[in-house]
Length: 387
Image 1: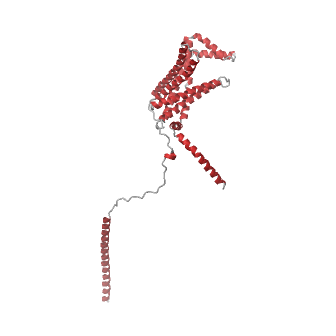
Image 2 (image 1 turned 60 degrees about the horizontal axis):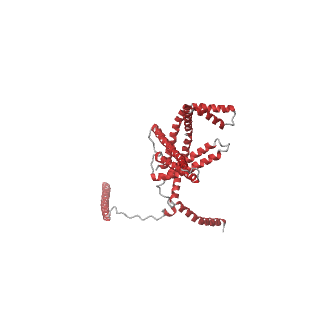
Image 3 (image 1 turned 90 degrees about the vertical axis):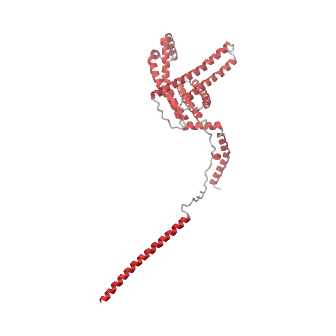
């Protein structure tokens, strides 16, 4: 036995051993919910979900700076106009955080912070204008990303809405989304504190039962808040509408994923906060990672919702009709264009016409030849008589 035969034999042996495993994997992939996940992943990858998610994450990070400017402006208005007595405490807080800096640099930083707080009007105006632009762009890109997963045809539909109206509608949607997020997460926080106060009033403030209930209540309320947020996103933001049954199930998956992202981000920030080397940029990187994964989560759930009514994958080895090479069927003879009687009559008529034509032609040629011969005979006889 040659080396080639041995390699071929081993290959066939490995293939025969792997055949049952392959069959089992194919059967597992035919399970309903697994096939649905596979269809969602294929739709997500085929419609550039990762690229759309990266764009949404970019505009999310871009919108943070104007939001921080507006928040800082609100803080300056509160400290300068309503509670000027707290400015001293803010100065002391800045000094405590920068205890390792020399006195001259510390004085400059403190003066900069105080002057910025007093100039809250200009900071708030710039932050509001840039925030409106970046927020409208963020909402528009989020809408286009979800529509790309939900459209029947991937090609973008032409939007004839005027730009001003489009920006205004996106701002209204963004305000509604921020309001929904604020209300839901605020209710989660208030409900947790309220439950703790009620437990204290009832005399269960420091018991293990109260601690266990609060540990269970906080994640539950976070899931409810996330579910409401995803429901708002899939019901209000996209142009196309999907069934409420699939949206509420997909929103539940999104809420679970958001809870995991929040918990993981908190762990990352807590782990890097004690390291002085990454304490400055670590939270920023963790926040950018959170925005990216959150955008990817929105789009993968949107792909799952869009593929709920698609049929499962077909097993090609068993259900597909293979093409076989078969001989062509003999052509069936159609009705004759001319009947036999008509053809025979035409042949007889042609023969008769040909005979008459030939006879006439023969007689004519004979007469011409006879005239020529007679003329030659008369000419010769005349010459003889003259001699």
